[in-house]
Length: 434
Image (cartoon, rainbow, N blue to C red; front, side, top):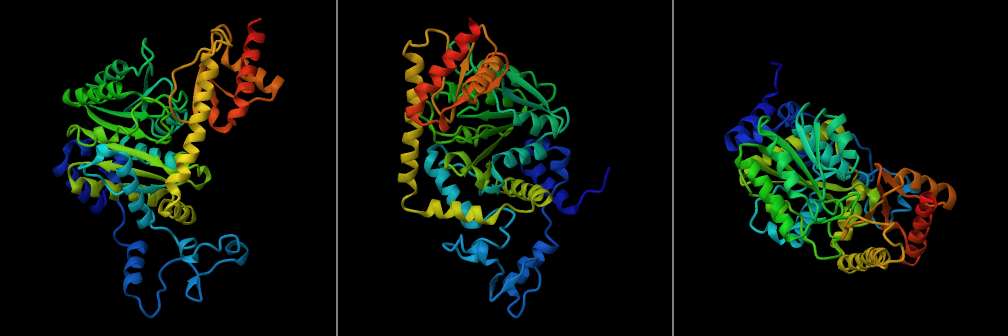
């Protein structure tokens, strides 16, 4: 066996003693990774605390007691102190931001009350968080279970990068509600492997669907049944569009329900400011773990920091500062509510148009109640042909997914323009049907 660093060995021993199931969930990389306790970072941290004369440790430049910077950059950022922009952020992220995000998470998810969680670790947005999960838990041949309506990046992150086997089940059942029976079947089929990674993305991309209370309970029951059958389940809630719940669905992340479900279930929450706070280019996300053991949470945090150190070293500091300042603002909630109302208005307008009868049964659609998107379910014509016609003839961009599905992002269309948009989609479809 290849030499394993004593720090990694120590973390593995802790996990093995505290939660053999979580230890068994780790990939080979997950077992081998650790966060260096000695070296540049730790020596720099020690120097920061004790080097009162000169601190010649860290690789930044100082001038006049603050980080050296160019006036052409600082002139556009005068509202911020240079130390909150130019210095490296810690690998785990800005401590005040991590605390603020945890407070927000607890406020918005009452089901987390009394649950034991790690402090959220800052990621370079959600894809990076998912990539960390893939690195820590997915080996070649491991099963990753996702619905058949999913974000294509899952395939790249878990399948291509890590060699995991992607198993799909239909997102919806015959009643057009969440297909928890399909999830259960896919999970129980992993009994011989004894391990599965389950990705749950609500509001769902591409359909904009979030399950209701009964469906959510069925999802949780399916995961619990798999755990009771001896399967170790890493259950990941991809909460990219969290908070954008427009109708009678659950308005919380399922993370709270999974947090202390069973010793064989490890709950991981991936979320971020990207979509829910409308800061796509800031690349600020978070990864949070749940466990009844503080030692398990600490070991997972150390391994997560090891992955971050080995890949991006640390996330961007300016955008963390911007998000922190927003979270601390007394106007934050009111401004979010204002944007929520706009998004909800667009979703409701789309539904009203599609339900009005003006398109006959030509523009059938998958149920949607949340998020940024909805999906048309076309018949008699290929989604790709419709996409191309809309683009070439009418200058309208949409996304074709498979043979029948056309994803439309109402998030980026003004409410007043939605009628024209859907009238034109209808026109394109009828022209092709003719």
